[in-house]
View 1 (cartoon, helix red, strand yellow):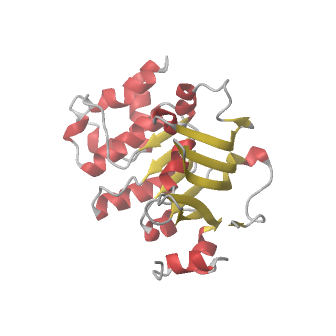
View 2 (view 1 turned 45 degrees about the horizontal axis):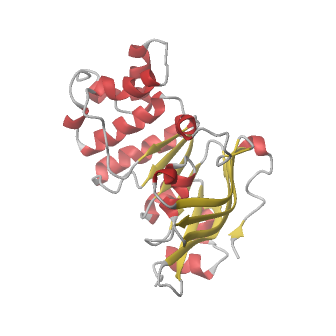
Length: 271
C-alpha cells in the first residue's frame, strides 16, 4: 500500500501539473512498474528516488510519452495533463513533448552552434518572434548566458559537460514548456557543475514544474519540494517490478517517513 500524504497536495486540479492514477508500464509481457498514483503540483520540484531498476526513469518517460519509442512498451492507468489523458488517441506525442520537455542523463547538444542549439527547436516549432532575443533569454534562464554570449557561433560540443547540460536545459526552455523532466541530469557532471545545475533548478521552478530522477539522495533533499520513493520486487520470472512506496513532502520523506522501507533507504540501511 502506497503512503501518500493527502493534506500536503491540493485537490484542486488547476493547481496540479500532472495526475497519475494506477499507472502500470509493461515491456512486452513483462510488468515493469505497477500501481503508481501521485499528484505533481505546479511550480514545484518533485524528486524520484530509489534503487536501480525500481522504475523511476520508466515513470518519468511516461510523462512525455518517450516510452512510445520503445518497441513493446505499453501503459495502463491514467496520466492527466490539464484534465486530459496523455495516452488518449487524440493526443499528438510530438505536440505533447513541446509542452513537457526533457533533459537527459548525458548532455546531448546538437552538433551545431550554441545559437542554433537554441534556435533550431524553436524554429521547427514555428516560432515567429525575435530569435536573437529568444536565444538570449533562454540562455539567461539557464544561467549560462554570461559564459557563452561571446561564443554563440561556436559549436555547443566545445563546451564543458556542465555547460553542455545547461545548454540542453536552455534548449528545452526555448520551446516554452510547462513541465521539465530531468533524468539524472547531474550524474555525468563534476561537483561544481552539479551545484550550478541545482541552483538553476531552484530558479526555474518559479516558472516551470520540474520532475527529477536522481540516485543522489542529498541532491533530492536539496532541490525538491516533494519526493517519491520507489522500490522493486522480484517476480517468479526473475524480473523486477517497480512500485511507489511513499510520496510526501521532502522533509517528511527524509526525516519522518511513514514506511519502514523508506526509512531504511534514506538512512542507508537499505538492502
